[in-house]
Length: 196
Image (cartoon, rainbow, N blue to C red; front, side, top):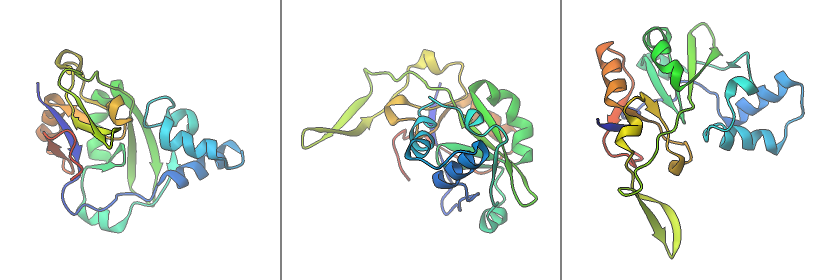
């Protein structure tokens, strides 16, 4: 069973304009609360690390713009930070299989129906094959990353606690699901730590 890091194709534009600050503003507006560092920290840290769900913070979803340059690229799936943004076609094929591994949030855009997928599943790292990096004696990320083969066997998409939930990974099963349904917008990289 192969594991891949999900990446954007080269020269891909951001699909929506929903950054951490905008998410936080909409959450506090819908909850009728004042903006606070705690809300920003929750969205920036606790959501990727799986401690809080977006549906708990914003049950009605989010309002955002579907950016024009991304519309022209017309990808079915867009990697957006530690989330996936799916169009209606991708949602049709992926919503049932992915629902076990995360949550879908409605995105209200200017006419286009989009869905934000927030992965909530983590896979166990194989610590015998994972090596931490050090700089001047201080821990500085990872030199290598591997996942426990048994743990990922029944998972389609997942995150790593050692990566603080900021990167998305998948198995051959998810890759086949995307390819079999001719869905565009993702690159499957065997280098699990690459940033490019």
